[in-house]
Structures are given as C-alpha cells and as structure tokens.
Length: 68
Image (cartoon, rainbow, N blue to C red; front, side, top):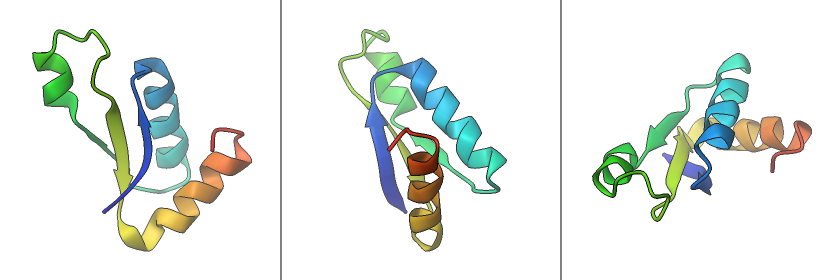
C-alpha cells in the first residue's frame, strides 16, 4: 500500500477517489475513524492509499487531472 494523497479537504478527497475509481484503480480512504473521533474539525488529514503495484498509474491519473 502506498499513500498518494493526504488532505483535510473531504470534498477534494471524494473527487480524487472518484477519479481513481473511474481509472479502474482501487483506492482506499484511510484515517476516517480518527477524523470522526476528532469531530470532523479537519485537524487530522485523511489519506488515500493504493496498492503498490498501481501507485505509479494512480499518480499519473492525478497528474493528468491537474491534482498531483
């Protein structure tokens, strides 16, 4: 698993997850529980991870979308 994005912006994270899924990848949103525990005050970033074998492809998808 490689982390490709970390952000406190939940809308951006949702958009990036959709981009990656549309590209046929299987992203995983990490740290959702800590974010809920903190009361969603955006103190702790959530992270998007992908399998190591697809990390380069995921980064390329984000770069092509202007989101790298």
